[in-house]
Amino acid sequence: MSSLPVRPLDLADDATATAVHRIGRAAYAVEAQLIGFDGIPALRESLAELRRRPLHWRGAVAAGGELAGFLAWEDEPGGSVCLDRLCVDPAWFRRGVASLLLRHLLTEALPGRRITVTTGAANTPAVTLYERLGFTRGEDFSPAPGLVMASFTRAAED
Image 1 (tube, one colour):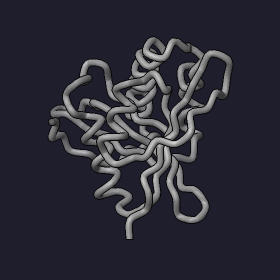
Image 2 (cartoon, helix red, strand yellow; image 1 turned 60 degrees about the horizontal axis):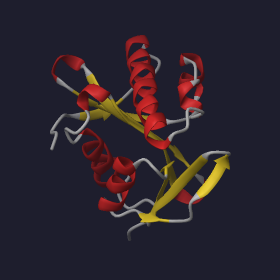
Image 3 (spheres, one colour; image 1 turned 30 degrees about the vertical axis):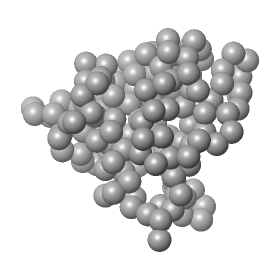
């Protein structure tokens, strides 16, 4: 398991925003192959569009400041949180970065909060990760022809 430091990311910083955009595109390209659907909106999102999103960002940072992966979430009414994206640079795949980021979110950034997330139903690595970390799978849904999404919720803890 990776033990990289996780820190807030400031997308007003050009280098940070560019790294997030690059990693997101690379990670979503891999997901597109896994799920057989290349219409993932983030694949076509411009850097300016990414920066305008009202999200909270955290990143796993390697020695020398290299961004290994990141996640971003949006606060929802009632205190819930929607995990908008969890992306790992393909060069860092299978090294525990996604688990590290998600555990950070659950235990340090948003402890006790209800969290929802969706992923491609055929994205086995993501589905396995969410289930392993205590998310409950809800109904699958199809927002576009040829695409089946899986929904997950992790209940709020008292």
